[in-house]
Length: 297
Image 1 (tube, rainbow, N blue to C red):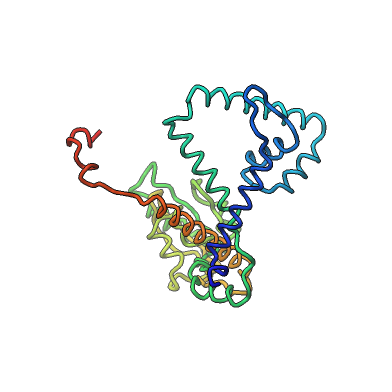
Image 2 (cartoon, helix red, strand yellow):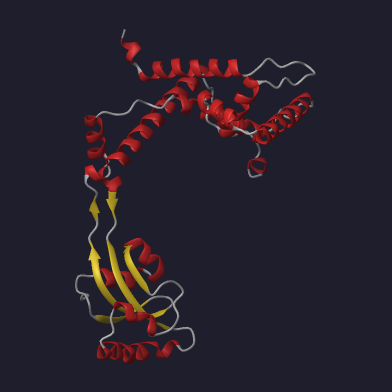
């Protein structure tokens, strides 16, 4: 009786129930008539929203005013008529886009049917311990900078930066005064609790290393440091070390991640089982037998 506890068996049963429910919602197709009734519209709503939830679809339909309901009906009739004509003409045959849409539709259905139950406390704690690095917060820094552009006179940038550094120190300029000095920078002048990666994307590796270095004093104008844009005088007020978020702070995130991981695993098991049923045969000799010029196309 262990197969009754198998998640794959639960998935298959849930999937069968889902497909059965959708088949009930979809009315039999008359050859030359489009039947518009509640069941057809409920099915239409679910396919458009990619969420196969009959109760939700019913609530949406019941909440519609007359104008919205009429537009929904017209959309359904238009789509159904065009679909039937396209199918009569065989436009669905050999079309890779349609093939992909059908694959996606099947995946949406399997995902809706494979959502696992809420994990218990032990499962959450175990998943957190196994995936701690996923909840790592990058180191960050709060600082201001004064920018000296290298665009017009690259050779004179460092000398100008040294003069401006002395002026900042002598006037007692602080974090909030940075906007009064220097040239206009492409990004920001003041950075508050920004991550290492974010700062690096603006200043480059070399300047970012200086900003985060313990040897760079806090609350003092320092530099110059250089980026591809020019020179920067920096005033670092705080550095925050990188750390892994405590379990209690990210418990809800861990739960969502664990449920998602379980859903993906169940989907993959189902797909593997389906593939096995088709017993694929791979003939490498046949695949590689084409002339070289044909394979390069």
